[in-house]
Amino acid sequence: MSVDPEAILKRLQEALPGAAIVLRTNPSPSGQHSLLVAGANLIEICRFLRDTPDLAFDFLSNVTGVDWPDPAKADKAAVPAAGEGTPASEGFLEVLYHLYSISRRVGPLVLRARTQDRGDNAKIPSVVSVFRSAEFQEREIFDLYGVEFTGHPDLRRILMWDEYVDHPMRKDYVAPDDYEYEPTPHAAVLDQAQRHYPGTP
Amino acid sequence: MAIDSKLAEDLKSQGVHVTSFESLINWGRSSSLWPLQFGLACCAIEMIAATMAKYDMARFGAEVFRPSPRQADLMIVAGTVTKKMAPQVVRLYNQMAEPKYVIAMGACAISGGPFKEGYNVLKGIDRFIPVDVVIPGCPPRPEALLEGLLTLRAKIAKEKLLGKHRARHADPDGTAAYPVPEFGAHDLEPTANRDIWNPPSVVREAEGGEA
Image (cartoon, rainbow over all chains, first blue to last red; front, top):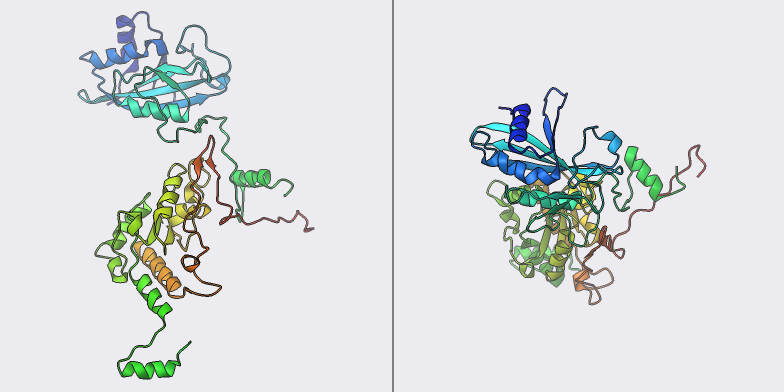
């Protein structure tokens, strides 16, 4: 059963009047609407959703990230970033949370939170204190996107090695050039071949 | 050195088996290959199936999977070697005692396979350790692994213990250990062991035919 994000938004606004929450509708047939929330309110929103008996979103199924290097391509909603103030112009990272209620058999409720930028302020509060299942998922996003989850108990890389410095899932990531021979390169591999062997057609 | 084959046949009919020390050693080695027990991805499932009753790798003397590299002769690299796992695989290889052999099983172990364009997958284990037999497939069927094992047995049977073309393990100057790559900031360092692996050099002709 799917959730009604509008009703939940209303409940959240009644319970947490200070929190910045925007409903983002998804026009696709799947209609997976989401709630864009400010990072500063994320933990209290999660706790409210989990602990309110008739909502009972007791299961954080999935946490994932999105890189928005060009904010013009992101949606035009008033972007509640992690901290105070207006969103930065140079792009940001977004983290998505898929919440389910196992006891009520509904879901997913999609929460989205955005960082202020993609650099030093790429921070979002960790929800591990509410959903323990977020621990490894947040480590993965820290590893692959470079979002720093403040308050995370053990924020280390989980897939790549500790000495690694890149964030491979970011749009501007450039993989190391370990190109070798391909018998019939085409498309992206042909570009790679030409970069690797300059001057060849 | 070589025995007249007719004489050998005659002796055999009388119950006397004549052979060379070399072929006796090689026969023993090829008939009891003990693989190192480790798997890296879905190819390992096929490897496990090959050891079980239906395919029964024990028929070829290679069923004794050893949990320690010190006791193993054969490393079956069964699956995707990620860059994070590659140093451990090389270290395990270094810890195996000579003579030792490597089978690269499946597309990933050979070249990175479907993950070749990825940032996290080693593009072939032959970049760091010498591979004796490659088995294509994604994953190869158990029969293919058995075929690879028989190919390796045939290769061992032809090994020379003396002379110029002797096997690596019979050569006092041969190396048993290869450098273990370090974790770098962007990739493994080095990305390949250039002493044993080099990409084919590509000479492309310009369009229009002038080389």
